[in-house]
Image 1 (cartoon, rainbow, N blue to C red):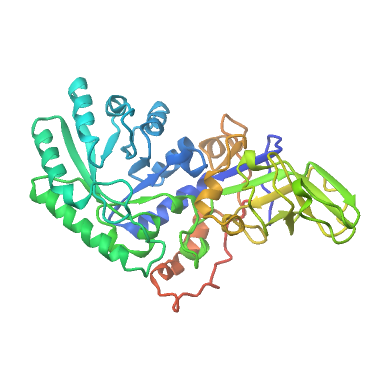
Image 2 (image 1 turned 90 degrees about the horizontal axis):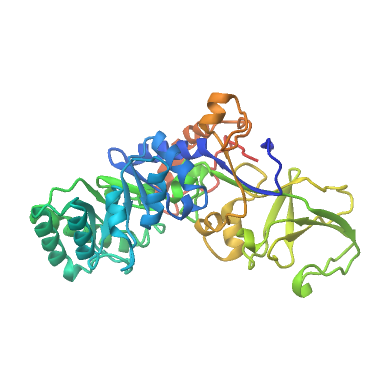
Length: 437
């Protein structure tokens, strides 16, 4: 395990490897081809930083960006990003005019159509819209019984020059469980919805259904474009496969520094509730990250890495800190030592370990890392052009192996995503990984 140095001091830090983002996008482009790739950067790019991640994804060949809210898309536009953007989650208070004026495509499930048309009429600028059909997820999207009416209304407005129907889309419910039959049903319903739209005279630019698990496991769901979120951050959507087996490189390393290190006797209680008692004389280490930083208070049974060894988090996570039991008094004074909560590389816990410990999913573990934790970027243009000088976006030393090399080394096992559980070799994770820790 190698340490990633930083020219900036830190108490806590999320290191984001933009080379990993680029490698993941290129890898997913290869899998999805000839379909295009939409990089989903909603929720501040799943906690990784929407603007730097969007730029890296576009540099790697993503053709579109996806966000939930117009406000997220507007922030990208204000940063000078002019790639196609789709925003799909709205309320009656949404400022459709601002989004349309900024050239952001609008996802429409039904009720939004008339407010969007009103905004387009006011701006004297046609809106670009994607009609969403609910194929089975039961969240957003037009109910199938109302689909033909929505399509016909959209056609009328298009003929009036008030909008352009760019695409039709939907969202998969259980693609992360590849052998469930519901995905087959959703693909069939989506094809039927597309046929209704095309028979009504719509000339669609993009038809898109697949998310990251659908991209990896369902080629029949690729259509004209895939929307990949989790995958570009290098995390696996499948419980039985690691990122390495899928050819992906985790992009985030969450780390802190030891804030206190002290020896305690047997029977010492730890943290609120004193629900953990030491069983022997030991050394306790305090780490300055807590639930205000996005660490789940409910987490149990997880470890952190200090100096190449893994140790148990014990007691309750507090707002600003948690405690680690070294289970020895021979570790020496570790004050100021680096503590890695999760990241890529051998000997380091990963986001999935924390997800299991918190009873949640890896998506949540990275996304919930709060703004109080500074982001530090490697693989930036500053690093490439200025030799690693500290810049407005900080950079770090070269990785021991490039993210692109790991993706290439692991590409041979990506077909495992399509295999049945009996055919999968879950022990085949490649060890050629880039270590950012």
